Image 1 (cartoon, rainbow, N blue to C red):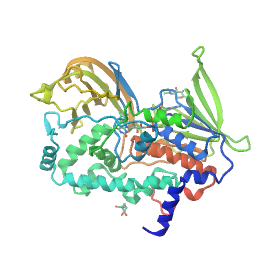
Image 2: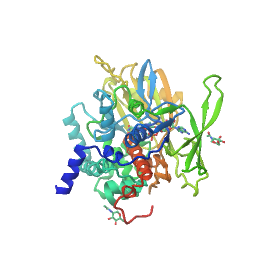
Image 3: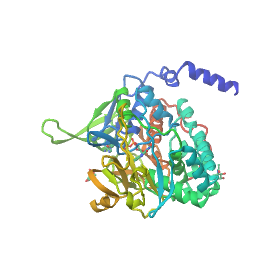
Length: 498
Ligand SMILES: Cc1cc2nc3c(=O)[nH]c(=O)nc-3n(C[C@H](O)[C@H](O)[C@H](O)COP(=O)(O)OP(=O)(O)OC[C@H]3O[C@@H](n4cnc5c(N)ncnc54)[C@H](O)[C@@H]3O)c2cc1C
Ligand SMILES: *[C@@H]1O[C@H](CO)[C@@H](O)[C@H](O)[C@H]1NC(C)=O
Ligand SMILES: *[C@@H]1O[C@H](CO)[C@@H](O)[C@H](O)[C@H]1NC(C)=O
């Protein structure tokens, strides 16, 4: 380790960077708006508060509930994750947020997954991890070792972002951010498919068509044709130590929003206009809110120095228009993929899957074939697990299953998969991008002072990605406001066109 780095580290230990820069300036924005209270908006509010201090007013617009795609469904007085559910142990922001906010990791309970091809299980996990390893090695050979190496390398690069953001660096586009993390390697990974990427790394067709396919179907409802970068994020979900938040992952944005002391407005933003009539340009937000007295919809307007858009702008999701900007906004590309979470409390039809003893049915069925009716089926535990909790087995009528599919399943389809159906509930999501390959990577900057988190999802959609995107737009806001140009896309000279 060189001396420079040592001094840098010493500085970082003695004084948090944010406190250090804050002291240098005396002009601060008075009003900031964050549109959307998902993990992306909550993370940006948290960091905006840290960067700009206690005087700035932060309004957060959210017509639905705080958490967005982190949400729960209630069955029998118990709540179950209906959206984002799994967190990787190396997701530093999610880990840090939970710790700082006093949220606990949910107890993990034994589970057993199997890969289903529409006729039979091509792989079944054993209750003994040693036996499972032996089975994996038998079926996929050295690909198991290759997978660990691939994920390890990807994570090492990925973790660069934390040091860079701690140092106050911000990125104007998703490509710049990926480049800062992993150089051309990461950018290239967005331009080829999972199949191409894994083939180049020496993986077998069997691994690609079974394990990788199952992971893409489970996590993104899509296939191995999606870009390799999001594919690698998805494959990291095969590692040990995955966790979730006790009480539900939505607890993280809920608590972040409180810590950031935002003013939560239950309104839906419809228009963002640039108003140049004053001393300093302001953004006028037009929003619709229900009058609490008579439930009439009112249209209101308010001005801001900085606006963060923390919701996808894609069709069917947010419907925000922009006006009076000097240059038209870049086109909002792509569509979002529909994934339906069909909750079923009941008894799995073991016979349908060719299982002889229902007690031995896998608790997680993943699929390796895009023609299958469902993406995956999993037996779930509630988001709050009491001390004396013992999960019911897969043979129980009281088990709660989540079936992911591309459209709501009909009663007769549910009837094929389950012999007893006690309760059902459907949560219909526009869940994540419908990825195309080569992937397109957009901008975080819509205008000076107007930033957009959710293009980051086109690299990969995950809680941690939105948390990183949220901090990035907070840093972009801060660096722009104080003219810290050297902290935006630092050290980048050559650019590739995407
Ligand atoms: C079924 C499913 C499973 C998933 N599984 C995982 C997983 O296991 N692990 C993982 O890491 N990730 C997972 N994800 C992805 C993860 O949930 C998302 O990437 C992440 O939650 C996105 O957060 P966000 O804040 O960027 O967006 P959102 O959570 O969508 O937040 C945007 C918010 O903006 C609000 N909004 C929209 N329009 C307006 C408007 N006009 N005015 C004001 N507010 C508006 C919306 O109501 C919403 O609350 C999953 C997602 C789904 C749907
Ligand atoms: C990424 O692709 C470019 C262009 O094909 C190539 O020059 C570069 O070496 C690649 N980077 C890596 C790390 O493979
Ligand atoms: C989107 O907004 C426009 C203009 O305000 C409105 O005409 C349209 O009905 C809205 N669409 C949806 C899906 O809400």
